[in-house]
Image 1 (cartoon, rainbow, N blue to C red):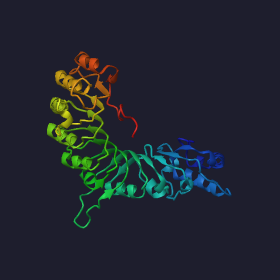
Image 2: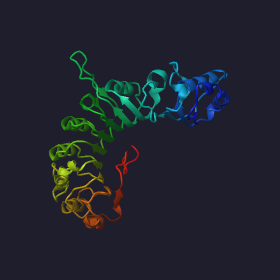
Image 3: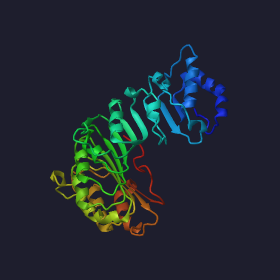
Image 4: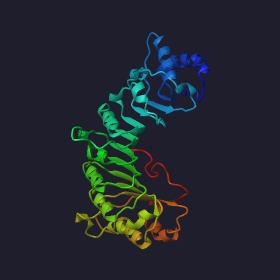
Length: 365
């Protein structure tokens, strides 16, 4: 179901027949995608109010998108839209590209039953904690964009927030320390972090991940600053149960840790009982971006995990590499032995741009 993409104030009176038709079919809705406009939704709510009884019994997913072409949305009178409270089976809400946060004051939603939220933009830490507290059954949080919060005063120290959410994809626009220090997600199985600030609090990040003992998948995309080998090693050492790991290399300046990292990821014959081994249970490795690794060191690491290396260790089930086309530092010939070792389990591609989502793990667990 769609709202018109562009409509003038005068035209807002014209779609009454459409609104009435939508109101008459509400019991059949399973998936609803609609451009967010309080005026249109208010008309729909009024049309439903003229019915003797109605229910969104079958509605399971709602997608709301903010449409700048809807002229009527520029000066709409604030209202409270409550029609979705009558959707007892609504479990999944996608806020599309609604960078405007006015919906939080205008739209009443059955938060307590929601299991997945997608594309929640421009949240500070207080908004995020409120969202978690009102959504006790939330399982997946896909693309949460968090702004920084002002440093807490002594009188306003954030309370520790605990939640059983299992999958989280979070984008930090600036500092992330407040979020990571005050959030405990012990049931987290799938974590994706995108960080674009000039520094990354590795110690805080490592502590946050260590508290998530169920973590099985990590996707890490870090931009605009150099990654030190010791920081990366300390973080990965805290995740011995991790099974799936994807690392985005966004800049060549981040490559200084590559050879040291892959050397550390190489398993030795004693790796099964070596507590210093990195990611001993790794099954899927995905590398995306610009590469400046030594092919000999990388090949040795793959060999040690291909089932032909250390006995009794977990075998790498698949390798995914997405190499930028302008990358002249690594060629297909450099990976010939890797392809021979992994066979059909090696998935190596050339790309012309960095993907927004994980190409190997497009969906949350």
